[in-house]
Structure formats: C-alpha cells, structure tokens
Image (cartoon, rainbow, N blue to C red; front, side, top):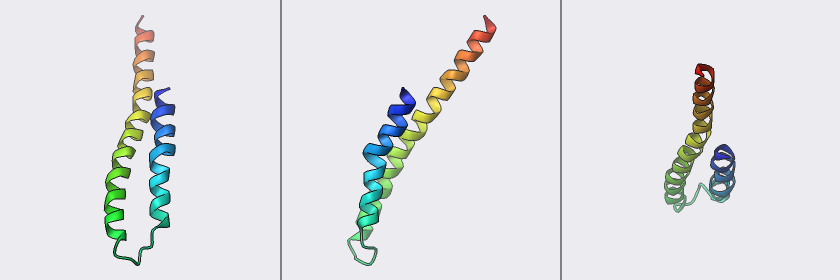
Amino acid sequence: MLYLVGSLLVTAAFNVPLNNALAAANPETLDSEPLWADYLRKWTAWNHVRTIAAILPKVSFVIAIGRQSTQ
C-alpha cells in the first residue's frame, strides 16, 4: 500500500503535472528560468518521497522474512 500511494499516486499527482508544465514552457523566453528553478526544487523533493516510498516496503519485506526464518 505504501508503494502504491507513495510511488504511483505521488507520480500522478505531482511529478507528471510538473513535467507537463515544464514541457509547455518556451525555453526561449526569460520567464523559463524561474520556472525551471521551481520545477527542479519541487520535482526533486517529490522524487525523494517516491524513492523512500519504494524502498520502505522492500526493507519491511526483508525484515519480515528475516524474522520469520529465525522463528
């Protein structure tokens, strides 16, 4: 569940709209630089959330398997 919410939902709700806004921007205009800076800050933060949400379930699974094998 953590993987689904943290990875897929975050991607759909935050990263994809950020990507779409950046793709729609004209790189030839002066206002694209602040857009890029804002995009980079937000996208990186949400990508960290996705990464953690993808790693935690795997770690939990390994811990559960380890505990089960010692019983």
